[in-house]
Length: 259
Image 1 (cartoon, rainbow, N blue to C red):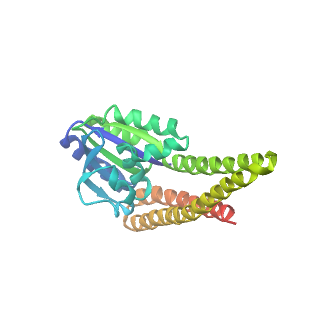
Image 2 (cartoon, rainbow, N blue to C red):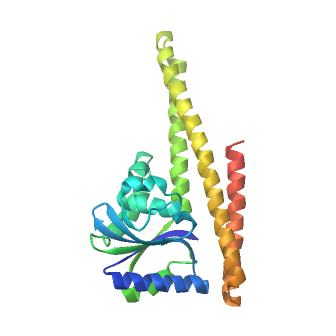
Image 3 (cartoon, rainbow, N blue to C red):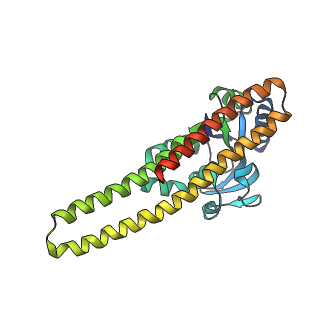
């Protein structure tokens, strides 16, 4: 399963050791890290970006200060994670009803991530939480896992459902309204449908980005399979097959949505 994983540490040495251990696990094929970043919390909603790598980190700023104002330029799960930590993404999620899921993630992370502490943020494929958790424990790392795909899908579906309901409600009101009120209601319906068309255009862009995100991960696994040992190759091949299935399912979903 592809998860968003955040591990917090009390000092730089522990965070650095934890980062190196995660890279070793990745090389062994026990986990597959798609994107990663190491940050230090400097203030309530500000961070220092210390290290980042992976295809989804190309739009991230150079190492140094990172605040909510920069999150808009970062695509993919890693951007979502840091956006949630700075409070930017959470505001957007809350507007569309994902407050419980976002708050649960943030509550668990924020208890450990206080000013002066460090965190490693991963977009990672893992068979279960035990491996990462057990390997971070010697460095007093406290780890939180969240299903990335589930969070994305929940956010998208809630936005669409809310907008569709608004249009349906206004159309029902229009049918039952007096003639003198129908014009103003029609204006509202037209505005909502314009928003829906705009959202559809944005969704198509996001869909293309997600497709590229999956394909990039498949390509990265191909390279690792070629370079890896036999034990690692077997695990990586299984993960590649899962990603290929996810890509096929995503294509089918988008073909249906945009038909």
